Image 1 (spheres, rainbow, N blue to C red):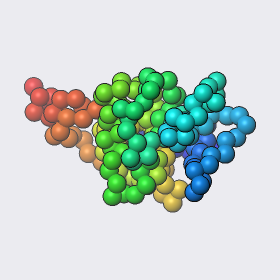
Image 2: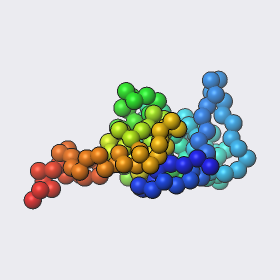
Image 3: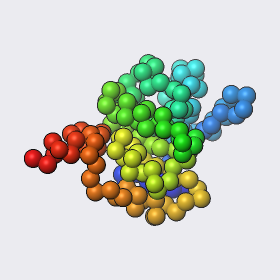
Image 4: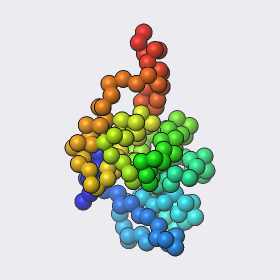
Length: 164
């Protein structure tokens, strides 16, 4: 079973992430907790009712288009297809701050040690680190910085307000 970091611990991943084929088709296992592409869930949500479903936002998906409370999902994943694509940071922050999502917010894709602290500051609490990277080493990335000047999901007030 694959492993990931959730709430600063390395755990086994009980969710299966499903991706769409090149033709847009999706093949689901008969049972078990699955994370499906957000656009697939929008198109098939009635068929998926009753299953343990999570969704995965692509960089161009808009959280504002969610037709249900974000907390409807046990996990919401956000795809980071490349290190240079930072749109997922905004999606994570929007899900936490505007949509009040309190569940597992998972970063997937090009996720590694150098990004974990920034992801945490945007509200992510789960990280599917790239398979070519060491999980124990990546976990240390959450503590790369002791303070940040800017406000974030993790610290809603900027440093100058927290000093007093």
